Length: 117
Image (cartoon, rainbow, N blue to C red; front, side, top):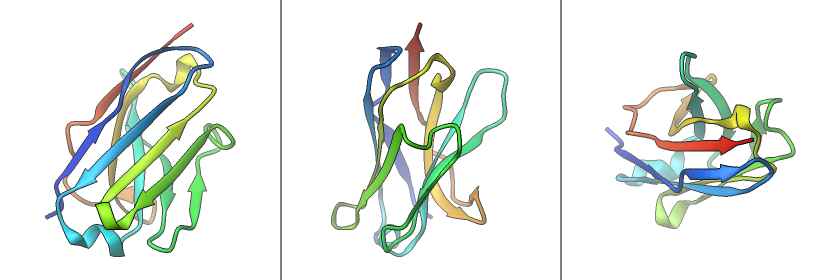
């Protein structure tokens, strides 16, 4: 079972940037598609972006052009660069292994991102 630790969240003004990190505890990270998800207050968790082991990426329409997902397989680390942040990006952000658009591993504690208007 891969354990995931997210970090890098915080409070930022609209238009600002944050970079999230996710460290996985096992080597299996390097062979899997990984992704970011988020859950806003009162809403269901939603998929944000994914990256394959080979570096191919895909994004939700709501973040396309503003967020960039990347990975460092040598460090078992996943990143999410978030630019031009909007108040509607406010959520707890999680990383996970991805299969068919769903997170399939155990969820970590997430990292809170709050964007003020």
